[in-house]
Structures are given as structure tokens and as C-alpha cells.
Image (cartoon, rainbow, N blue to C red; front, side, top):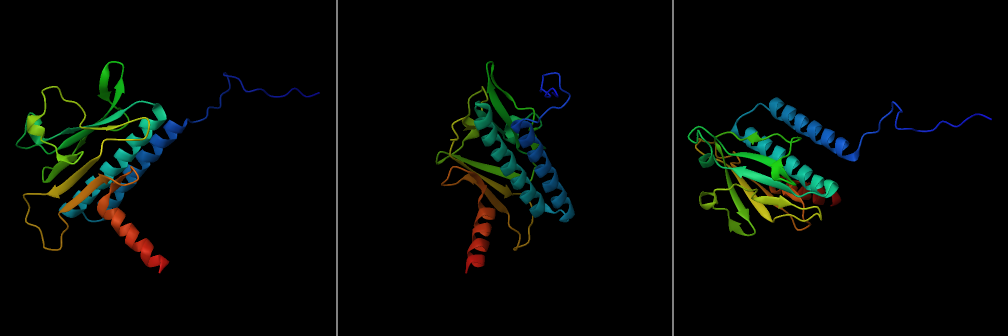
Length: 200
């Protein structure tokens, strides 16, 4: 009788966890997004679209990770006025997770510094976010919860301080849709129009 092989903790083979696979997929998506932007020839409009694409991917990942880990995730928004070199700084954002010691930076998603010419206008629960009146203790402006719900928000990404051609799209939006998903609004509309055309 041949003895059966048993899987032990000493086995050299190791399976990847779902969280590890998701992190790898997000990193690949962000890298591929960066490649497509670089190939696209650059320019302020491409930079704007690349920034929106990256933000949307990161927000989707944070929402999924909140559900998978059972921990709230938060979006820390930092306008130029909060930074030391505010005249030369653009907006910055970073993702945080709730630990026993409070909100801490989530190491899998690096802090993102937006180009100075991209301004953000943030609406939270229907009210424009007045960051100048924010308390001294900085907390995430937007939260993603383990139950799948999140703060209802819309962020307008706008090119400012540049002379742009009339045909250049200077504004893009990211928002929570009716199904509770974070979407790039203009891209979602385009995809819906294409879907309707294909069905007809």
C-alpha cells in the first residue's frame, strides 16, 4: 500500500492569498495605465486623464480591501495649503486603514502627488468640502467600510492656470454611483453610450 502524501506546514509550496493577488492586479493595472499615458504623447489633458484613472483604480482597491480585511479604509486629501511649500505644491492624497492606534498609512498604495495644474473640488454628502476650516487634527475626508458602504462623494479634477485649446476637456469627475461603486463619471457615460450603440 502506497502511503498518501499529506500537506504539511513544512511543505515548500505556498498558495497566494486573495489579498496578495488583488494587490498584484492593482499594481499591474496602475503600471499599465502609466504605460498607456506615456505612449499617448503626454500633454495636460493626458496627464489629467491619467490622474483620474489612477485615482479611480486606487479607490476601487481601497473599497475592496475594506471588505476583505474587515477594516475601514480612509482617503486623506491634502490640498496645497496644508503643505510646507504650498506655492509650488499640488494636491496630494494617500490611503489609510484603521488600526488599534488609529488611522495609519496603507503601505500597498503610495501617496500620490498631483501636478500643480490639477485642482480638486470635493463634495462630501452633497456639501462642498471646505478644507480651510478643517480641524487641526487631520483625518480622512472619505471612508470605505467593511460592510461595502462608503462616504458619498464626488471629486472634480480640473486643469487650472493653463491656456488650453477649446477642444481640450479640462474637467473630469469621480463619484459614487447609484450602485455604490466608485466610477470615473465621463468614462462610465462613454461606456454606456457604446453599449447602447452595440445593442441597437
